[in-house]
Amino acid sequence: MGETEDEADGGRDPRWRRLARAVVAGGRSAVGGLVDLIVPPVCLACRRPVARAHGLCGACWARLTPIERPYCERLGIPFGYDIGPGALSAEAIASPPVFDRARAAVIFDDVARDLVHGLKYHDRTEAAPLIGRMTARAGRDLLIDAEVIVPLPLHRRRLWTRKFNQAALIALEVGRASGVAVDVGALIRIRATRPQVGLGEAERIANVRGAFRVPASHRAAIEGRRVVLVDDVLTTGATVSAATRALRRAGALRIDVLTFARVAPGGAITI
Image 1: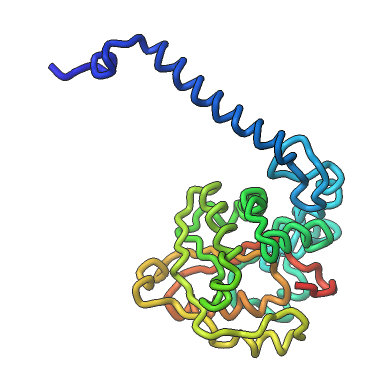
Image 2 (image 1 turned 180 degrees about the vertical axis):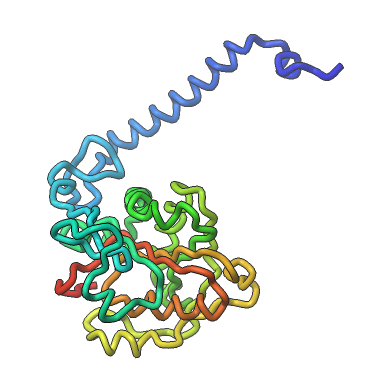
């Protein structure tokens, strides 16, 4: 006869184990409370004090501009009013994207910019879980039958100086929220490109042309599969389009783009 769980645990009453677990959990909570007492939590965007860590204050939540239906089925550009199911924007009709669909959680306005720049340029990695959860909710229709999530990569030199890839952190949170596998090595940047900030649309396209590749060791993870490409912000689409072409060459069946924010049509590009 095999031992029961109680016998293997020295015959102790299961209630004691539950109590022990509660004490451990309470200890963790106490430690978290002590940390909050020593270093009071602040809003991830404006840095003002808040009641709970890793979130936004009420004022910043109110200033976010979520992207909700109705929107263009291809580009995810929000419409001012509902023009019917499957509607496409003028941009999608005039210049169809190389990727299949794009979705974003919010418009890239002041609060979204503070969140992205805090993560990207100021090492505020504590913003990644919130950004990732919001991104996952925005991409539910893309993720429902997706087979792999791929973050937009940095070149190794930029990764060395920045220390982490913000798109990978967001992708991992999206994977955690959705249950879809994340492959951070499925796409690499084979050429160091100039920063896209300050470049016009044509310059952006030329800057990233041929900059991405799927390594042979990851081709099986991409070929014939439905891929969701994750980045922080969608601007002109030049970078994700170059990445999409590399994934297509590797045999991806479908490529959707999912970002936390997107620049509003006609909006200033400040990233």
